[in-house]
Image (cartoon, rainbow, N blue to C red):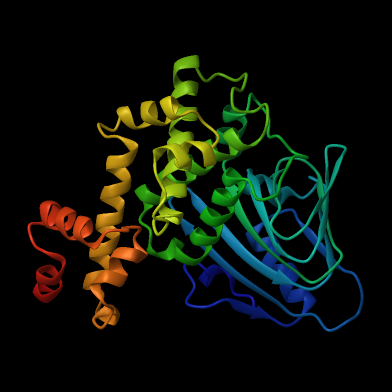
Length: 322
């Protein structure tokens, strides 16, 4: 079963139970790549694929194999680009442009789809691949795709990029094209900020525009960090700045263009999240005090007062109105 034409969007992953089926699927998704099995062991794979606007994402599970692209395949010219790869399980050796890198679970790397590349999957694996336009990536990074770089570890930027890719792999079908396009742009900005030495670039992007992109990526980083830590009562501008690797002054400057402050934005997100929890049917029996604590309010009176000031109703009244 390898009807790739029906994979955008899928209702569930397609299961492939033969290597020839897997080869057909890979060559449909990534023209020019030629998979070869490592052994004659029984082979099974699964693949999901979404295309929304500029977003093109594939989630692949497969057994041990070798996948190479030598640029001699004419079909490769049909869909030139590059891919941001997130290794989810298993280990892979990736060789391109005299760079050999080992991908372990949680690692990220960029692959240039217009140049020869070789993937050696030494274990059963899972990868999520986000196809990005070659021109947009090269322009962003000084004229070429930065292959041979790995983003790994637990720093906040890498964690956010990982989380963004995983979220896209499960929720892409719910996006419309404008939102998908914006997320792709944000993803490029985050990659440019995360890879050392690439955030400035030497390409055609002007200094002012480049500075705006870096600021946009940094603001996105901060907002993701806040979203992931709303329940922490000690979250405040100082701790946010420290965890995101910037000065408190810079943090305030990032929010100035949005007409707000870090603290105002934090409280707004907490109030909106608490309202979402209150109105969710599955939370009807959840005490309002628990909702306050789950969204980072350490004082119930402060929560209730802020909630009524923001929405015109007390938390209890708002829940009953739903």
